[in-house]
Image (tube, rainbow, N blue to C red; front, top):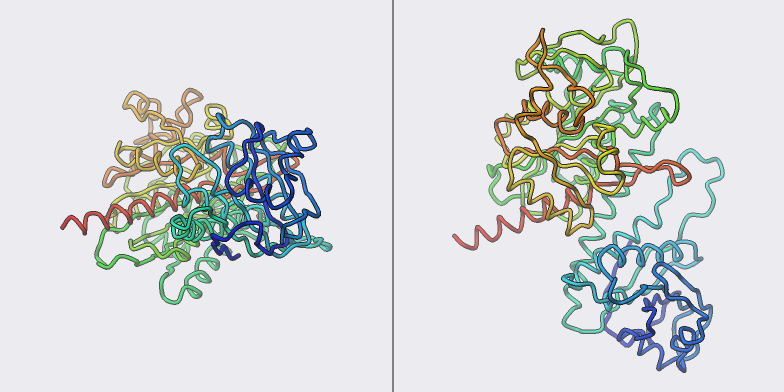
Length: 506
């Protein structure tokens, strides 16, 4: 998708559809005012006569507007000016692109950079527009015999009122385009069924990404024989009951000017289907356990965005992938396994398997002497009880890293919430028979899961993102969301910016 920038009078823009955001009070923004003048006060009269209710997210298509070169005019409600914050802005943008995606139109022009959002500049607004465009045109139709017509929209012109904002809008569009691609890549991996998206499929996908990167990305796949030799018995224990072999997938991106610069590491949970194992899950909604690899999908999505944006940093992406199935060979409750780190774990519940694959992946990350490590996982149902479906849970052994991730989430509007990682919670993981148990009981389930992972992250700054409530939607809109690709990519872009400042200081 293309996102060109123009500073011309919007009334003279030739496009299939011109998108104009308006407030309920009728006080028109600069671009809307120019269009109103050119169209014999069409917009103002529609609002004054209540023919268009500018309630937040409302849209109205005007198939012909006199005095304008656009074929169509799409009005989008912003609600009241005093409530136009980030969330409201994004809701209006999403409503606009949902309508645009349904049109038989290849191109559109939007004036959203005019909208005043406190503390958000033109580049941020342009980025949100580009991301929304990608989300709106996404369709998962791989298995439909009659998929229906795909959205035609492939060019969105960003109109800016001030020439000085053109470069900022251009950069925002570039970043939003790259992140939007990553979000949709993650959504596709998440939406694939478990009989297609297996650990071997994810490994092949990593090899394809590397092959198509022009040398920017390398991929290494550790099969079960390599994992056995390595001593990653915890990861292997999860897939023991499955016919599908487990994999540890390692992708490396070398973007820093110094190839020896400490990399940032992303670690994704890639349970391609989770029955719960011997601790079998209830049958209701078990089909959604294909989404249990959305942590891995978000890592692939972030890598996709990084390849598009080419930040000057080093990145290692690790995906620990297995299928959790019941079988005569499957790990049983009460079994004790040895991790790559050497700690023994009593498996009290085989449905707490994500932490068992992640702990070996975190130990594997030590060899890269990382600047930071962030793991991403659909880890606990407790995260949904605590935070619902709006915020990602965040735990960390480093306050600076936690703040960096929270800041990235605010910028990306892909937000997280910081939970405590106190020593008192660690006591819940005590075992009579091993170094630790893999569950800590019902209280504070998200926190004790983080405590478990923290035992394997003592050699580097580490954070855990629990995306169980944010990685996918259920019900009529069932499907992967692509979160937290935007947060992760922003975090990496921020680290690039920090390193450039440090170089400048030197």
